[in-house]
Figure: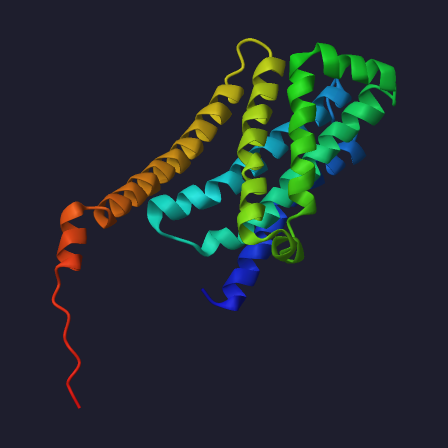
Length: 226
C-alpha cells in the first residue's frame, strides 16, 4: 500500500470516528437532543465507545483470518478514539448527570454492578492509552508491552457487561455487540491454540529418541593426517 493511500485511509478513519461527536454537537446546537438530553448524549457516547473499541479489537482477527495487514496501522488510532469516547461518556456521567456529587457517585460505583464494571473498564483503558506511543513500547519492551495491552480484551468484556446490565429489557443491541466480541475472542483463542499445538509438536519432534540416537550415531569424519 502506498503512503498516499495509507494517509487517505487515516483521514477516513479520523472522519468516521469524529462523526458521532460532530452529530452530537450539531444536535446540541439545534436543540434536538430529545426529551431526555442527558440520557441521549450518554447513550450515544457509550455506544460509540463500544463500537470503536470492537473495531480496534477486530484488526488482528482480520489479519489472522484473511492474511491482510494494512489495517494494523490503524489499531492504535482506534484504541485512542475508544478511550477518548469513554472519557467523554464518563465525563457526562460525572459533570452533567451527577453534578460532581462525589459521595453519590462513589456509592453508585460500589452498589451498582453496571457502574462498577464500566468504571473498571475505563480504569483499565488508562494505562493502555498512556503506553500507546512508540517510545513507551521501547521503554517497556515489546513482550511486556504486549502483555499489558492484552488488558484490552478484559476491557471489552467489561464494556459488554456494562451495556448488558444497563440496557432495558427488550433491547437487542447489547447481544449483537456481545456476539461480535465473542467472535473476535474466538478467533484469537483459535490462533493461540494453533500456536500452542505447533510449539508442542516442534518440541516433541526435537525430543524424539530416534532423532537423538540417529544424531549420536552419525559418523564423524577424521581429520586428515599431515
